[in-house]
Length: 200
Image 1 (cartoon, helix red, strand yellow):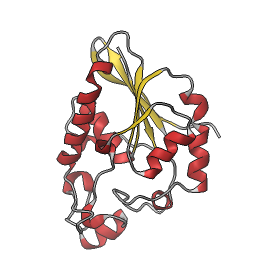
Image 2 (cartoon, one colour):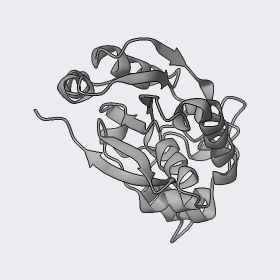
Image 3 (cartoon, rainbow, N blue to C red):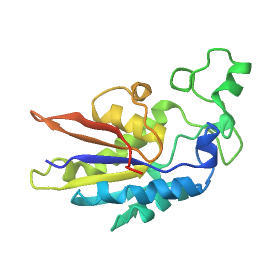
Image 4 (tube, rainbow, N blue to C red):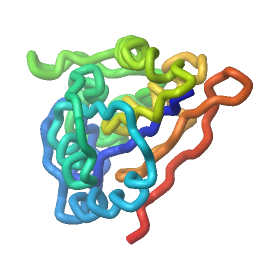
């Protein structure tokens, strides 16, 4: 049966600064573009039946520079909408809310462009992506599918694929430009590889 290859986008200025980057459409840095190009040797070793990307440029540009082909855009792969916490760091939030954790405590509403989402909302989007990929993932003859997206979204999707609640995405840290793979063992989805970084 087909596996699921996960690819987090390359570095951005906001990821370096550890700012919550949800729907803000920031570009890759020069280093981020270098990271994306460095994914080519690893990704070329896979035969992929479908490739989906978030519409945000940091993901779609990563897919382009990694030379993935047949790429489809899926809005459900957009990053968590952090609402009023968009563009600020965890440390800044914790000055107002000591001990705050996005996975446990969620976000506050923002403006019209950043209304905010709960972790359950993100989980529902991840579930829709997985449902659309079901024909590939359950086909004994299928090659892997690949998703190019964002750290928190891919962590939530991993939890959902493994039968866990969305908030358990907190257990799966994923670096910029890292890849991961979800496969099968005895008919059940399992984690077969995690946080693999491209060789410089």
